[in-house]
Structure formats: C-alpha cells, structure tokens
Length: 467
Image 1 (tube, rainbow, N blue to C red):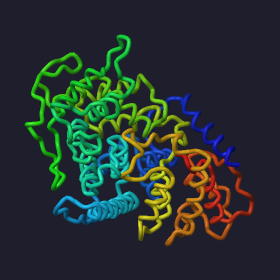
Image 2: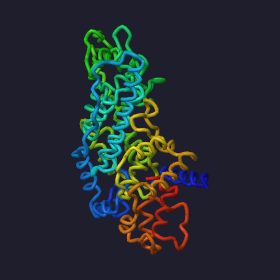
Image 3: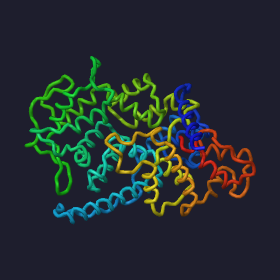
Image 4: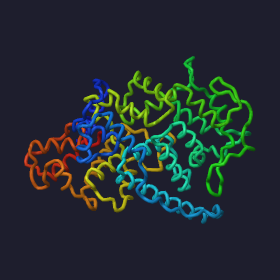
C-alpha cells in the first residue's frame, strides 16, 4: 500500500511537465480560490475560500500581498537571558549551551504559534522561504537571540526589497557566525561566505564559469572574499561590527571589473548579473508555481524584477498571475513541507494551539526542524520531503491530529454541509474531498461511511500530502 501511494504521488507530480496554459481567471471559482490560498498560505478554511470566491485573480493576489506586507506578529517575543560574560569553564559552557537550546525552543514555539494563528499566512510563508534560502543553523551559531534577530531581518524584508534583504542578511551576525565571516582577515580571507553568496544566495551553482559560458569563477570568489574582510561580530552583545584594521583595502577584480570594493559593493555587483534575477525567480517559481520553471517566463519575469528595483512582492505577483500557476492541472503538483502539513491541518480544523512545541517536534520528525536546516543549502524540498518512511510518519501525524487536545471536526464538517455522525450525500462528499485534497483521492471511501470517518479517510489519503 505504501509503494502504491508513493507511485500515485509520483504520477501526480509528473503531470506538471505538460501543463496547459491558462490565463489568470477574471473571476475565481471555488477551486481556484482554494488553490491560490493553499499555495500562498498553509491550508484555508471554507470561510476563507468563500471570501475570495468571485474576485478577480489580480484583485485577490494584490490583496494577499498587501495583507502580508502589512502583517505584524500577534505575540510578544520570547525573553532572552542576558549574557554578562562569555563562559570560561567547561561547566559554564555547558550551562550556556543548555540555556541557548531552551531559548531556541521558545523561538520555535513562538514561530509555530504565529504560523498557526496569523491572519496573513503569506507573510509567514515568505519568512519560512527566506529562512531556507539564507540558511543558518542554531547548532553552529549557538546564540539563540542571534537566530531571533536574523528572523526579524527576514521578516522585515520578506515581501520588501531583495537588495535590502541581501545586504542585511549578509551582515547578520548569525550568518557571519555560521559561514565563518566574522573571522575573515585581510591576511587570510575566508571564502565560505563569498562562495555561498554566489552559489546559493544570488547566482546559483549553474552559473559557475565553464568553457566560455561566462559566470563566476574561483578567482571571483577569492577576490570577493577579500572584499568581505573586516565584517565581524561584537563578542559581548553579538552585534555586527566593521573592523577597518581587518579589511583588505586593495584593488579587487570581480566579474572582470576592478576597484577598491568592499562587501556592499560586491553584493551590488552580484545583483547586476542577469543570472541573479533568473536564479531567484526560478527558485520562487519552484516554491509557488511548479517544480519545472518555464525558462522563457522566468527570463521575462526576472528581467522585469531586476529592472523594477528588486521588489519581492512585485515578482511574487507576476508568478501568482502567470499562466502556469492557473493551469488546470497545476493543483497537486507540489509537496507540502512538514511545516505546511502540520500548520495547515491545525489552521484548517481550527485546532487551538495551547502548546506549540508538540507541533515543532512533529515538524522536525518529518524533516523540517525550524532554526536547524540540514546545511547551508537549506531544505531541498519537493520530492525530498517524501519517501516510504516519511509518508508513513505523515500518515501517523494525521492520526495523532485526531487525538490532539481541542480537535473537533464538527465545525469543519458543517462548513461543507456534512455531519459527524451521518453519511454525507454526494454533493457533501464532493465538497469534503475538494476541501482536503487538491487531487481525486487515491483510496475509495466505502459506502455508509459517516462524516467523521470521511475526514479520517481523506487525511490518510496520499493526495493529502500535495498542494
């Protein structure tokens, strides 16, 4: 059964390779409204779907982006213990690390609650996206407050200006600690950040120079590393500090251009490369549209993004209004991340989050440990989220959800015209299926099944893992 479910998932995902084009609808029907909300949030309620139904796609997308831009956290931030002195003894270091781990758990719980309760889920989705893009791990950074401060940077720029986000993320102390930039000196420049800012944050690994194809080279990385020397961290409060004595003031040559570049100048040079907008647009396409970007559309959207000044909200709008996003076969071609799966279920069924830490733990068990991406590449996503073992664990989560404190499917069933203790009629069955699955179910629900059991069956269906 597990193999068959994985096969069905693979077949559904492969359908994306031949999606017929369709312009963004002038008036959203119920399925289209649900598709937009599922892709830009976690999992919508039927009330949210009905609110969007009937609006034009452009109107709906503009409203979602505007709401996300204006969003502010609902909850007070965690409290962090002051660090008066760096730990000296082994016992002090152990106590310090344990304190940082406790504080990082508080951050994870805070964020999980925000995602579960925010009225603007697109805002949290974008923070999560950038967390995976500018990936740093608390395991190496250690300082929990540094991870918190970094998230506030991602939050500030999530739908703002990518140039501002790149500059702020590059100087962020968590990033400087994670990629060893804080220890880079003119006598011995550390190449870690220079390499990753090109390969992973702006240009992509495919833009490496080869056989006359252009792109960046090892020499570009070495020269850029010289420009980033002197970017450092204040040991006491973990704040960014530029140390002129450590900075290489000599002439550097990057992308064939020479100058007395500092780190900010190199970041601007990166954004002047057409490959940057293409790489970033394609990555956003894979997050919101499909796993196979349309090269011509990516080129068009990327050129407009670069020419328009790197407004993240603007490029997202283009992607969400693209023909590929609204193709009839587009729903069900992406895989929900663990966070999307967990948060989506909680939101869709209105489950109160008295304690978010079990949800944090479940997401980590399924492969997405907040604040601890697997490496600097972040989470690979898509089909990497699914294998036989993880699919089984995802189904177990659906079973556990039914026993989660406060879970009650009565209101959800009522929203689709069904009852917990009665078999839904054909129309209610269709509404129930469409509310939970982006594709027809893999398994047939037996005749005579009552509403609550219908919910349980659909949560166990392989199609529930898709969006």
